[in-house]
Image (cartoon, rainbow, N blue to C red; front, side):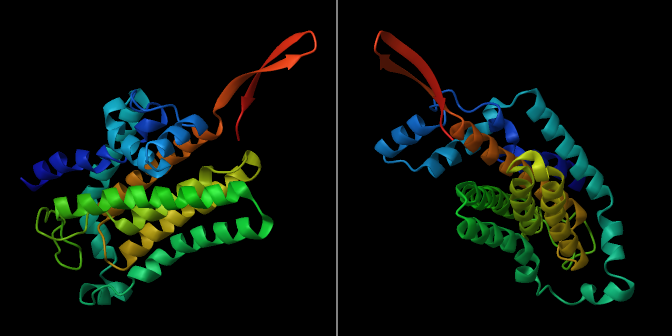
Length: 276
């Protein structure tokens, strides 16, 4: 019965976090870009609110790659759930035995690396006057807000008990807040922006740093016995998908182009400019 409930609940997990909007936004929305932002402003809407609207509606526009991502996330979460009990046993025996009885006091400590990544990106951008760095930090914040908000709602709807509360990994809809992990969700959202932003010169280094940040945060939650393995895998899926949504939406906005006509002495010239 518990496994059936899990299968029913997991699709909700990625409903708001799919990267679907990377390929398609609601047709009624204007194409992101300066013109769209201007329209939003004139209508009294902030660009972030437009992103939220597209984020919520994204599952209505899934294409084949989005369904593949969704299916892969389901499989990964299900496989992780199979090993939930074994991972908990590992982190509650031997030198980790104290995790069985001591409630977590590591909430802020485990969130610190992800918060530090945002702060470091913003500070560095200010020091060198890098507009793209400011945008990257802004994307980190937006990705974290969207993904963590999704995870926050889902965790209370699903109500799974934490490994500090029970030894049974199938305690779903029990009024607790274990699934998915907010720390893993936010860290992977921030880390994905770090990994996939900027030019390709330092891409390999950025990806090691960015995805390593997410993996480290997830490991810390397991080490401190605050979450099941499947909690962190599900959180990672939401975080990565949300970050890719933000990056794709904003990259399209930055790359929006406009045609214009320039009068010349004996005629005119048609130009196409890309705003970046």
